[in-house]
Amino acid sequence: MIELRHVTKRFGARLAVDDLTLRVPAGEVFGLLGHNGAGKSTAIGMMLGQVWPTAGEVRVCGCEVAADRQRALERVGAIFETPAFYDYLSGRRNLELLSHYTARTTPQRIREVIDWVGLTGRETGAVRTYSHGMRARLALAQALLPQPDLLILDEPGEGLDPEGIHELRHMILRLHRELGLTILLSSHLLNEVEQMCTRIAVLREGRKVFEGTLAEAKQTQDWVRMRVGDFGKAVKLLRAAGWLTDERDGQFVTLKDGVGTDQIVRHLVGQGMAVYEIAREEPTLEDFYLALMERSSRGGRPGDPGPPLATGAPSRETGGKEPA
Amino acid sequence: MIFWLQLRDELWKLFGKKRTYIGFVMFLLAQNLVSVLFRFTHASRPVARVLEGNGYLAQPFLSTLTIASIMLVPLAGLLLPLYVALVGGDLVAKEAEDGTLRMILSRPVTRLRLLLLKWLAGAVFSALLVGALGAFGLLFARVWFPWSNLFFWNPELGIFGVFDPGAGLRHYLAAHALLVTEAVSVMGLGFMLSCFNVKPAAATILALSFLFVNLVLQHIPYFQDYQNWFLTYHLNLWQFMFAPVVPWWKVGESFSVLFGFNLTFLVVGCTVFQVRDIKT
Image (cartoon, each protein chain N blue to C red):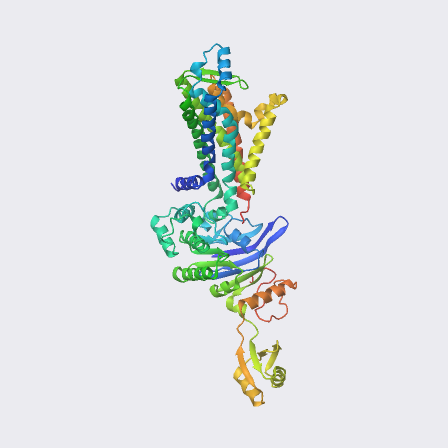
């Protein structure tokens, strides 16, 4: 649905996006992660033909954006971090104005969309009287009007309260589930991305440092949290049994393939050790992200394997090039 | 068909803003004030002296049409450029500043089409503002002065016109029709500057600065031979409509130059906007 091939963007001397290759397949909820200034909005700007790439090719819905922007964006809806409207006009008039840049839209369709986002009854009020949450819903409505196949959401939860974020998340997931839309979500709210996305890419200083499924991101050494009477002694016992490969933080161990936690418990209890808790550790996206950023900031190129991460998967990209 | 719908939408946006009406309100106030001052001070005496010095009876010429035309010259020279430059400077830069431009450009509309729509909306505004200027002038002058002959004098351009009421009204209307070219040209200048990555106020100020520099150069006597090069000289073409015999070749010349200026403004604006990155 979206394809970026070796895309570079410079603003004067500043390199905003560096040789970015990215593919968002149809039907995915794809998360674009990165800190402020990582190049996410610039990449999205290039997808929408608002920012011209210095080098490389951007294709949306099969069409090259630079050459045929109109066809590329025919079935695309977009929302930006702070949705801007004509505040002095009504919500309904705003929807009419914006949708006419795509095609003539029937009043029936506008009513449907207003109803879908839950703004019925407030659509005739001036947008300046809308709350932040209502503006977000209006932004979603304008994105849905052209009956898009692809939704591009650039920091859509920015400035919303927790309730608003929750509401927006459910709407987006409903869109994916009920209408089968492909969704590209740019965010630095890791919790949001974790709850919505099936696949992610991480940008750092304009370069892609990871691309893969959420499961791959979380794939890690199989850490097991172990609370015992004496952790040091337990580690010695398990090493002696040849079942341990690594340990950290006075409570985590990794076990050799085929070794189950039940064996560990039996062995330690048999040696007279008290075992209070033993459980496999589920890494979060935040663990993965922070470890990835830390490794990148230590100077490792995106393609370098780097030292083992506490949690998280190694970078899948090699030297900024798409894997063959 | 969708083009007209989009143009209607641009006009909705433009006329939905309160600041669009500043010009209309100011003309209303200014023309009212000037009419009252002409009626209740001795300001009409110099007009009478000029007429009598040229062998005319002054009384039939101290009329609605004469007072409306006298008001027209300074208002068209000073206030009209200010308000059309304000709207022209807003057309693109204000949308970029507010973030609505990014919302529009996430849709499959070409930048060229968007600019043409905006320029046309600006041109419609300019024409309406000129219409209001003419109508308010007649309306408020009529409150205090009789409907009678027209007298128009501009020594700088060498125009001395006296007309009966019917011919006077025709000349008055023709002058306003050509005044639209001045308004559209200044709006187009503001519009071109608005296409650059600047704040709306900067676009307006730059447009007015360009006009004032032209005006200064035009009024330095030593540059008399070069006045054809100054935009402001050609912006005065509407005043030739008050000449007893309209110098059509001069009108045509200025019209052609203004057409060239407008085309240049539009092409430069479109080119700059086309290559620009639109970011928050």
